[in-house]
Structures are given as structure tokens and as C-alpha cells.
Image (cartoon, rainbow, N blue to C red; front, side):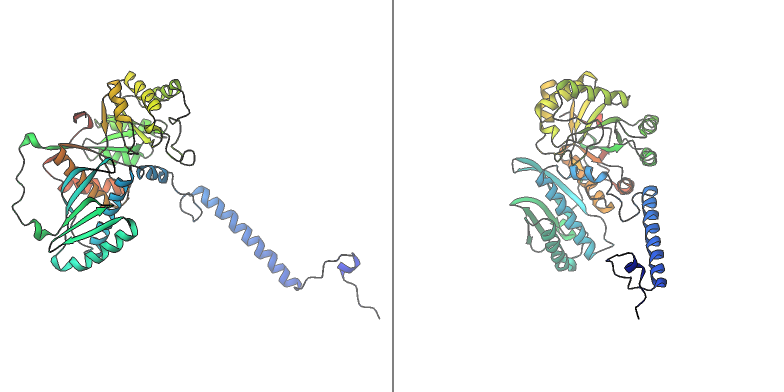
Length: 406
């Protein structure tokens, strides 16, 4: 007696019969359909609500932050030490008052200028041991080349590769008469500039509502530049053109639409500058968006600055590289020139931004003036609001163009 042939055998197929019963095979089909439907829904949600799903790409601002951190290796490492100090204080005293920047001095190291800070810590004597442990651990993680030296009983010194960058004091060390109010002629002046403007109208409205002379630096190709420009003009704010320039790492690092590039001729560079000026009418100056590669190139910068001079614009060098030739080329042309002293929001944390604001005002006291640049982050706006409530009264917050040209 012969066994009943299967369908596979009758068809001459070499494929074995299914090992699963029909009911289980049907269930598998439904599971596969459900999975496919889930994937399609996930793709739809990702497109409709970008940034909320696990597959969302990183925000474009990451490129700008990368460029900010290129502002000289030593400057970057000093800011990382700032972060280590802040984290260590918060670990010991989560409710501690702000750090007080007693002074900021300009020094030279690695062939460049840098800022050395003296900071008063909001700690008690009994916090010393715990703070020291946290600081050593945080610096080892963030800045391996930094070294901490304790000078008992109330002082620490920090060096980066042998260069003195920070002096930390407990309040007991500063128990001397308060610094007298300087005469009015000696007041420091501080100018704030917010880059990357032109996309977020709500941020522009919040910034304008502060009722302080913060300059708006607007992207020429931003989606809402006309609305943001209108807000700036209505509130009497100075307007700059935030001009994209080639960064190191280009094209992997994208500076945005219509940037200045090293491959351009002088005529092409100047055409880009003129186009940008036409798209931000009423602007009085230009500062660079990214540009760590372009601002190191004398040929490109001379061409760009010549076009700015023809349009009646000054140049504010954001100094995204310590090797910028912006100042030298501006001097050759006789162009009005400013340069950034402090970046406010490399770390998008209110406490860190407050510290940068206090560093900027301390620098303004020391030098007589300073320029700080920030970006349209909610944390930056919140930090500025907090800082305005108790900022140093000896430092005047002023318009950029009221500063002395260097």
C-alpha cells in the first residue's frame, strides 16, 4: 500500500513539507503583517514628528556646537575645567549659590592669549575634602592634562599642561573689605550678541522683551528672517549678518546655504557677501557662522572683508579658530573690527551659561570692555534673565557699536 503523496511530492519539489501546522502558519502571517504595519507607522511618525523618535537624526545645531569648540584647543580645555568645577560644586552642594568670578586676567600660553580666572566657591570649610575628590575625578575624565594643587587652607590652583588657568578660593580666603565701587569713568562695558537668529520667532520675541541692547545676528537664508528682522528693528536692536563660512571638516560639517568657501574666486566671495547684505537689510555688521577653515585663509578673508567695507559693514570675528587672520586683514583694509571674547553656551546648561556670563563681566571689569556670543537655546535665554537680576552693577550692558574698536 502506497503512502498518500503530498502536494510537494506531486509537484516534484525538493522543498520539504512545512514543519508547522496550518493554524500556526496562519498566525505567523498575521504576525508578519503586524510587524510590517508597525514599521510603516513608525516611519510616518518619524516624518511627522522629527526629533521625537529613537531614529531621529541629531539636530543641525550639533555642527555649530562642534565649530564653537574649535575655538582654540586651550580655550576649549579651560571651558571643560569650568565644567568640572561646576559639577564638583553641585555634587557637594546641590543648592549652592552661584560661583563668583572674582577676576579674569589675560595671559599668554602656547603662543596665544587665554583667560585665567579667580573663582570664589560657594562652599564651607567642611566641604573641602569632598569637593577635592569630585574635582580630581571630573578633571581626570574631562581634561586629563589638567593638574590640581591645593594650597592649605583655602585655595586650589589648576594648571593645564603647566599653564595656570584657575585659582579657586573658599569664602574664608576672601574675608576682606568689599571692593569699592569704581568711579563711573572706570565702569566696564559688556556687549551680548546672539547668533543663529532667523529661525525661531518665539525666541526672538523673548530676547527682545528683555529690554536690553542684545544684538541679533541673523542667517541670510533663515526661514523667518523677515519676521525676526522686524522684531529687532521694532525694539531698536543692532542687527548683524551671521554669514556661513567653511569649517574644518567640510563638507562633512555643513555650514549651511550659500557659505564662503576656499574654492571660490575673489569675485565669487564678494558676490556671496553682497547677496547676504541684500537679504538682511539694515544690518550694520557681519560675523562668521562656523568658518574655522575660511577665517584662517588670508586671500579669502581679504576678499570678503573688502566686500563688507564696500557695503558699509564692520566685521565681528567669532573666533571659531585661534588662528584666524580676520583682525590682520581688517587692519590692512582699514575696516572696523571687533572680536569675540567669550562663548556663552558651549554647554547648554543654565548654571554653565551663568558662569560664562560672570566670566564675561569680570573680563569687562578688567579690560574695560568685552564681547560675549550666545545662541538661541532656551537655556541661554533663561540664564540671561537670571543674570540680569543680580549682575555686577559696575559693568554696563551696552550695544556692540558703543565699544572701542581694537
